[in-house]
Picture 1 (cartoon, rainbow, N blue to C red):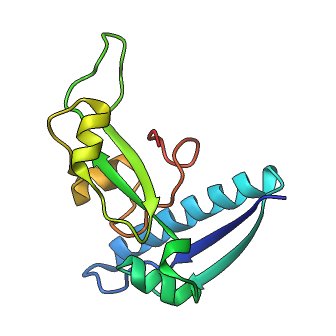
Picture 2 (tube, one colour):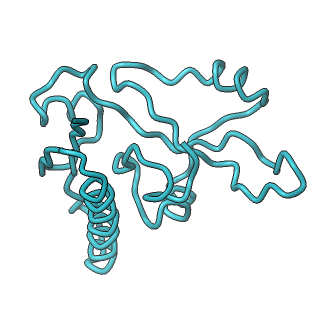
Picture 3 (cartoon, rainbow, N blue to C red):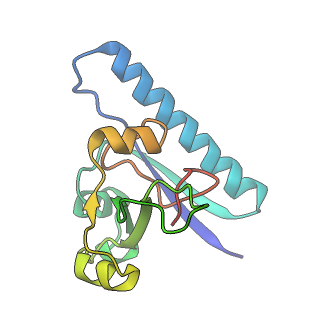
Length: 150
């Protein structure tokens, strides 16, 4: 039996507008429910842990009570500016998941994808392409949870 650990961080509370807070909580609930549905529908056992916001991978590992290397981090990167084929309607953004104990090596990504530039999604781009998620809250799931390639 595959066991997946799902760790859901509470959304930020230090924002200026209660309306923005409601939107963030609704987005977090939306994604969380889709992940639960995906795991449950596929018979995958998991442990859900509710904790305060964890801005770093180290903070997340502490909240889980686990070694840093057991976790992962999901990063949304822009890795190409134009479609590669005429019928390619992708955004140029993708989710890259790596061990929480590792650092992102953009040179390796550039070499693998034969590209010149790679960058993190801006806060605005992240919200647009992930249905409202904020930095630090991206789950390690692409489609069908988030409409981006992994």
